[in-house]
Image 1 (cartoon, helix red, strand yellow):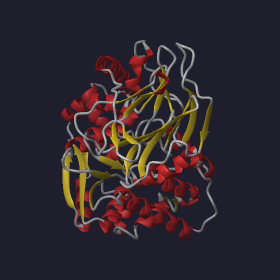
Image 2 (cartoon, helix red, strand yellow):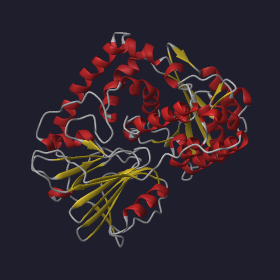
Image 3 (cartoon, one colour):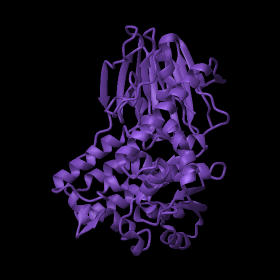
Length: 467
């Protein structure tokens, strides 16, 4: 499921799991140097680099081999930590009561090492987790942290450098904007399906997921599509029409308040967030992941296109809209919206073509004037999509997934109020209980488990559970 490293205390361990998952954790040691890479490995023949490789090269190599990843390099009395461009594999660090550094893919697994009760913070900030005393590596950044520090102090980086830069818009013609959008999305879908010949797509019937499904259908021998609805709303009809057009194996799934009641505590625990907006956005996806356990191995989504292509409208001027898009991308990097924990718990690799580094970069080079044009949101994307799917689908009016499934009604039914402030307060109360119990369980189970599986002749060690 993930890893827990305590290099300062001389211990390397793993998070326990009952069965193999889809995320792989690889480690390689040379003397007192240790390299750990963790994530959704697309290239099973990936040669794990030596720990003395330059950090920039390690980040580059991992970015080509993994759909999502994070990394740790221990050498010279420091730990160099990084996450991919979107923090798609969150990475956290803290100091234990003795001042030793500990690093983990789960913030909650670090909590017992602090020697103090769980304290939830009122909001997330760049470089911080939702828990007092625990830091998070920012998206697309490399941070360097000493292995040892004063007891009872927080782990502070000596350096933090972003390596994934958000490009500025460039002067392009409308046709160029359409071409580059279509080419980037096609490459993203193709790259994320490189290791499979059948997969699923979470399909709403709107332009974002429909275009992903249309591109996937061109590459896969078998395409399965899934649409979520609730007693309060669904998009079954338009999704069914597109599924018939693509010839996919299609399934409609109904998400009830009873399902959400059962799912919500697990979402809070695994995603390590109690933010109302985040939970409303990801709830339908998490429901599908639970339902597809044992039935699907790779699931693609259309998530992220709204933010990149101004799907929710502009912010006034083109400059303001472009600034809002960048602000949203940064905020998403520490929202835990893309946290793979629920997917991993269900042994499903969830992949987001719109949120690849190349797709984000391409989208940001398209000026806002070509995203909001002629009264149409996502103008460039819709025109690119019309080359893949029927025009009536490409230009279908925008409906967010949480709106199409009426998540506000679902959360009202489960939380007992339609007041968002009350809902947020109740989620925080739930979270306090959930994380206190989780930290207690982690402390009792002893997360650091010695011993790794050695791969003969490679000096590569498997830390945790690998697929």
